[in-house]
Image 1 (cartoon, rainbow over the protein chains, first blue to last red):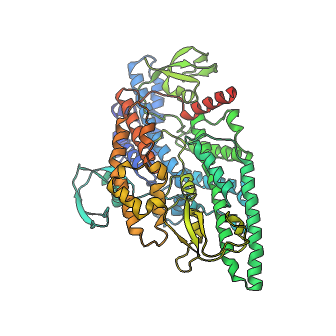
Image 2: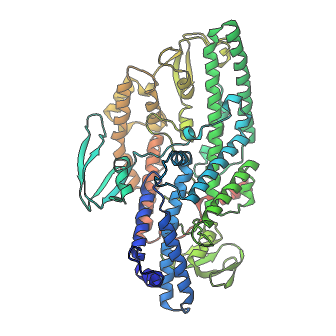
Image 3: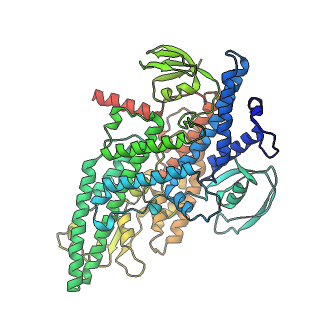
Length: 222
Length: 196
Length: 211
């Protein structure tokens, strides 16, 4: 996917060594996208990746303007832009959807976040979530709650809106070998047991069992 | 039994399982609120009586009515909230301008919620990347081709494509257009994607 | 995952209810046979068989689950809950013999949901109820899954007729997976179509005009 992409963008790279190549950037985006798509909870925000990809897209659009009309290269680049934009949009959509679904819990988590810990929300997402909560609360209040008896005029959104179900099962592929992962029993007769996850192997497991490994990048949801 | 009205509101929505919106049932809501008022007043007077005259035998009745009050609150809140989820879906399916026939089913406060949601979403999308931002309500499916063949299902008027060309979308006319530009019109049922 | 823009609040898992879930509100509207263990003064009008002013102690009444949950207390009994027929010994034996022959829609349609909710009340039979509900689900799951994966392009009304609400949801999930796969195999998955919401509104408008 990244061939035409790197060709279109190599001029913009500066010479420093720690800069991601476009191919690495797209791989990172795809990784974040799949994890976000399949995990039941909101993952850590990857604002830097989003910003870099947006920059690359603008840059590629710019290059495209300079290519002669009818050039076969132009349509290949156009297709490349469309595909990257799809992945990026789909990634941001998955996140927004979870924010709308779990907003009281996500905002609560953000509130109790220790200073210095990475945020789960980008500043823009945070603004959106706050507005969504305020809009919904004020709507419920105006239409019905304020007409109710005094002791029933509030609904605690934290209790009313369900939490993400972290016990959902997810498919995953192992990037880095893991030892002694404790798996909770499925029935009363079973006992907790430990397994090793071999590199490259694929599994179906409870999300809660491997959530930290998804966050660290040791396993990839598929 | 109490709270029958409340559950009727819920049944009404539940029947429209695929996310459609029925007319806002203002009358139903009002009836539930009236019942709540009556239950609350009876409870107030029984609470006073239980306190002043030491009638503890009234406590089960007070608890009974309070459970009914909570139930009514839940039904109304769930009815309103579920409608918001349906209204939210409209923004993604129709775009930011809703047909009058649908707006007609919404109450004034729902329209206000929709407008605010629209604004928040627009602000979020504008903030992505460069000056123009990114419209994430497009690109709903992975692209397979740049251009697609479409047929026009109704007169839609003039339509500008990427390079500034303006084409006329007339009923039954067929065009070969950039996929990205057509997505929303197809979702709205103005264009139809023709597969050869 | 991104296909449907309307995603309702899902019902709670196990013994939990979700406050805003329409399904859970309808589930908690299911009636349970109860006996009052205290009097409820001034509520006699709710009990149809008499015109007394109060509901006396020791009266058998049908009450919705939500009300029973609100009134039930472990320490001070205000009412006792009897098991609905399908959860009693007799029916448990039937379910144990062959769970696939039972019409769970007629018996339910919230057989699993209500069964899980019954565990809130300290019945001595709770363990057996939980076992039966679980084993029934396991015993029927294979058939539900197979039929949902094999019925392509056919009328499924007979297949879902006897399913509980939970099983119907599973059946639909299987069907939508099957349909997506078939579309992909035919190379139609990139076909852009009008939103089903838009189409349904249009259909409704047409029927309204015709009426």
